Image (cartoon, rainbow over all chains, first blue to last red; front, side, top):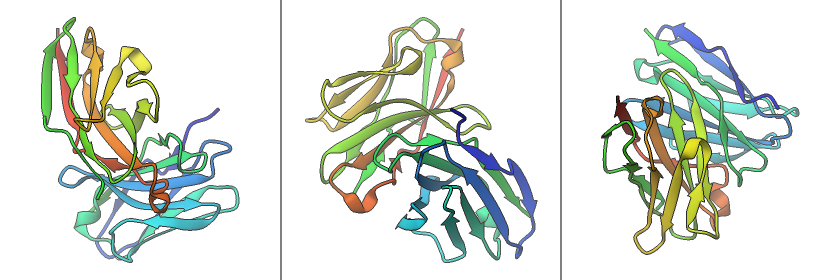
Length: 112
Length: 117
């Protein structure tokens, strides 16, 4: 099976812009979770989607949002970008959320 | 609250020597425990997990981990380190009994492992 794929791999944006990141889970997986990784804060949970519903949400401002489509692909959106949003954004998929999560290669976002 | 501690930011070992990367956790219920590895500019790669059963769990690339409930620890080990094992290692936990946190992993800060020739 193909692994988790994320697009784009790299992004450069300026403050105030918005960005959309995409994640395609492993075939058959219905749960998609998103994490932000920064040197200062480490790995922080953003949200989890299962069957097109947000099931879980981390402690991030409302500028961070996401959605999941009927084919389990997921997108996350960050509006009004801030310098502190520069990070590696990782997507992970699992069958139902209870099993092992498998991670994609990440999208590295740089906000100037 | 659920949390994970990796007390060592960095572990250095010589190739061929055994290695240990430490992890302790805190959950209110029964833990699911995981180890992941991250190479530069890559995502996280699953190594092994503990769900239930035997306290010694074997995983990929010769790694194993020992679950100790009384010490709430889940240390990662390998009998003989390779230079190619040099990477960033993350321990993660999820509470089996908290349905509200399904799909959410709590990670430690990571331990940079360097294996020198």
